[in-house]
Amino acid sequence: MAQLDPSAFVADQELIQALEKHATPVSCDSDHVLFRQGDASTGLYVLHAGEVTLSMNSDLDEPILSLQATAGSLLGLPGLIGNQPYSLTAVAHDGARVSFIPRAEFTAFMHSDSEAALKILQVLAAEVSSARRALY
Image 1 (cartoon, one colour):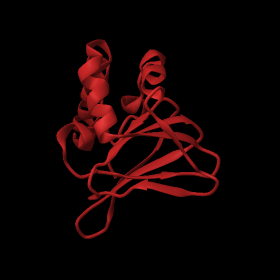
Image 2: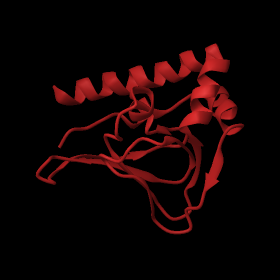
Image 3: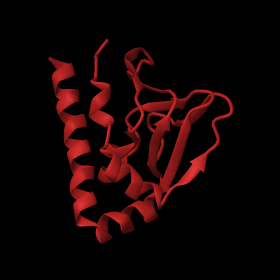
Image 4: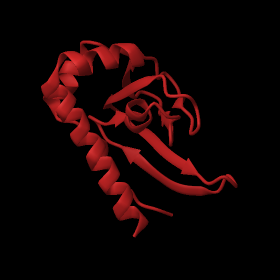
């Protein structure tokens, strides 16, 4: 099973604070599927505290990877930026503190704050690098 570096999903605190201004809380009173692999990308999830499991299955529904996201993780970023379906499944566990930024709000944020947009792209680049390392 491939191993991604969970830190590849983490944004700096300044970016998290800027994103929080555009986000709404997601209720995680019990395990809650944030998105499933293959679902249309509708927005960005931010993990503030607690646990979220990220996983990917093959076309034959066999596990390819699984990891625990850490606080500060931006979840669903590749699909959102690329206007593609989510490539992973994300399940927030009971008590996780997660917020959601809809696609339109995220896009407006990216257009209005070039410094934040660069930081978003740095997180995306870290995810790509981690995925490439996992393949080798």
